[in-house]
Image: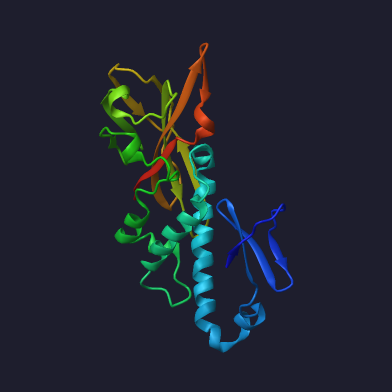
Length: 249
């Protein structure tokens, strides 16, 4: 594998050579590999096909979760969230101890305590991990989805990015069935606070309890703003916003 140094940024395959981008760098490698037809039909690749099927289920499940909370995640994610979530979903799938090899799936794995624990605590923006941003205790009512942050002092208990003058908290309560794709997301009120020494109790209550027979997922989000002439602007397009899946039931 080698880096591409050229006036042109190229991605794709040209003859026996493949050009691709990793992060901000462009690389080149020989095409090589086993043909798609052989992988799909050769008995020698039966295990490979099983792995591909299970990987596809993990990727689809991750996509399902992301799309279910797009209104929350849109300004609180990093550019690798899709691949990171797929990796976690693969661990959840591994907790499926009943399905045959090649048919293990997230819908079954998430029913187990360990499967739920694999997903709990996932941060959608790895550049802003909730525990680093919010240095205050909070409580969750799993029946209503209400999140409370008592006696918060923003200037002391928030790791605020430079230039931020305000923070806005919100929460989400989702019911998602990975087998059927049925979903219902209930969002909370927004609590907007100046980043100063004022003591406030933040109470975030979803509009209702989501309907469905899937699993319950609970989210907490903090977004930062800069106020200029009485108008609040998102800080750096949300690069410092944090969103975490705080509980799975």
